[in-house]
Image: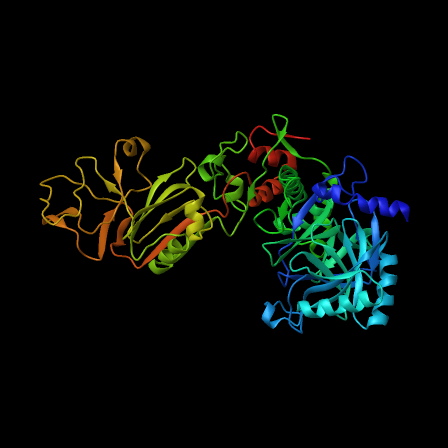
Length: 561
């Protein structure tokens, strides 16, 4: 008992290391990852745990105690009679407690025995309460202060030292399957939950009915959010990532390449001073836990255990995406940092892979685009056209201009794709009020009522794929609305004022809507286009490339070790 008390008294000192990656490590080479679980979380303020046997609670070092195999953990605040979150006025249960101050217990078991005695004597709920100094006793979960004060007075009348406490948003309470509180702890205490799965011979626990390897820690953020963090060894984390980032039926070398990319990405992003390293979704890597593991991907993880990708002796940011569309992209053309190992490469492998995302089309109505602009804090009532102002050497849009009643609004690099919700930034607009002016011979006259039309020689034409780079380099381009511009026709120079305009080119007649209510986008690829194309990796594996050659194709100048 003395050892337990000394250990508990050191908990406050260890708060800084609550989520240190070295906690629980069996040896100094173990790497742990902390993953925020967002799905399938059912409520922000509470979470259910189910153990394979009894649920065991740990601190940073040792087992503390165990509870039965079904628990619901809730933020200490106001709830209805059905334990739905409520405000103070509607609360049936709440954060007021009568707390006994006269004795600190070294173990949960001692505190529990005392709580059971008090429960029988005072006909109220009592349970152990873990604070920095050890375990004390708390009584009730009242929605009003007067009830907790009354219980405290009754306790004091019997010789106890009790007082009323408002623990609103300060504690986390564990309830059994009869919704009776069995344990409470201060929100910043290093408490972890798990159980033992005999079949896997590993610590595992179900969170809102989904099974996860490792342990679970809880943290209150933004007042009413109970943050759920899965703390587990790196290789076990990868078991739950790889089959959700790439089909488990693909070739072994592709799966191994994905395992290295995912492992490298995870370790690069370990940040001990933050609450967690990764999320379980596409903000980081898709992680769905034990239930979604596959034998083929587990084998790929095991066969590459510990291997990662390095450039100049340092871990890389191992970004990857679904389908490149024919070439990957330089990092600075999508985000802002130029990284030497994230260079665009030709990618015929992705094109030959049969990916359903190699080419795509989608249509948006003008009102949809206006809504997206306004959701992004713009103040737009009308959209006149969209200009693709700059395209990278690898075919992706670097700057996109939206012509609106509020003026020209510029979106650069990945932001344009995200605003429009497109599969990739490799796109063009095939109709709608978007086009090129070729002004090789004269400046295009703007839309002014008293402007004198040009007397000769302006050229308005489609830019065709057959046009050579030499010809293209001699031309100056402008983009903008067609309405109010001038074209040379067989009947002389005419001002454009119709809703539709047709052009004759080497490919035939094309009609452009000059006052479009919808915009049709054509594009290639899916994802940001940086680093490894997963469909490209699939094709390379089918053509006999090994996982290291796949990675060295997509990440320039890297080594595997």
